[in-house]
Image 1 (cartoon, rainbow, N blue to C red):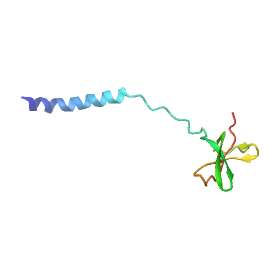
Image 2 (image 1 turned 180 degrees about the horizontal axis):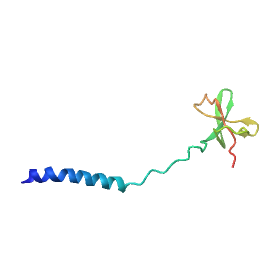
Image 3 (image 1 turned 135 degrees about the vertical axis):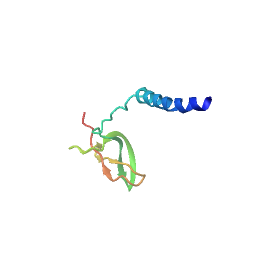
Image 4 (image 1 turned 180 degrees about the vertical axis):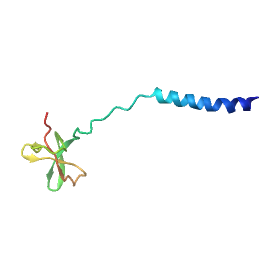
Length: 90
């Protein structure tokens, strides 16, 4: 008795679960891919990247990001900060 019931009920239950799953979840929000990433700026002192408290962006703008007279860079490791950062334009 139980086997014929499950043979007919299982496809219907699977179909209902698929419909519920399709409508139960919201679409993921779209992210703004044009927004520039923000980083803490670092400057080079004797080959070592030294942190500052200045926030900069990696999207190329016209004005370099600076702390005083030091141009700031994105830190990859303690001795490697090759990418120049740019001032955040608001």
